[in-house]
Length: 131
Image 1: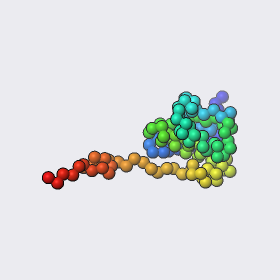
Image 2: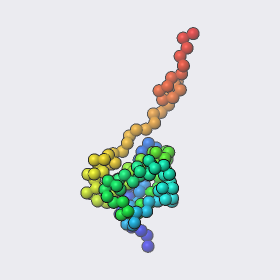
Image 3: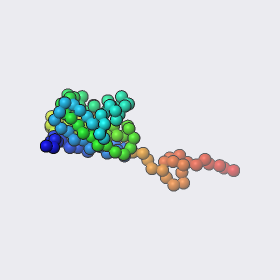
Image 4: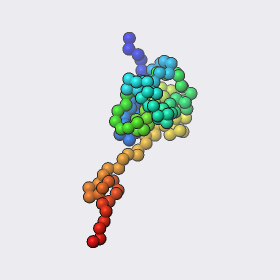
């Protein structure tokens, strides 16, 4: 018998995309087949992932299976936070207000600016020589 998903949501941050499957359970969070504290060893990233659960007082209420790819650890943690918040808001409408108030439902639009031709980077120019 397959486990029933209570909610499925996608979260994005920078170039990372996270899919979260919310299920009934005791609070187990699995990211790409590994425990969340093993996948995000940095306590800041772990804190980010757990923020929506803390705000809605649902820590230990759900099992979550997370698939995340693209970007680095910070972007992935932000994408997971966004996806978890969306899943909690989809599952229960009463969660929407506190999640919105904390800014977890807003997609962070900041991305790395692309490098321009004729320049060293996105904004950095080559050194100017007058003579």
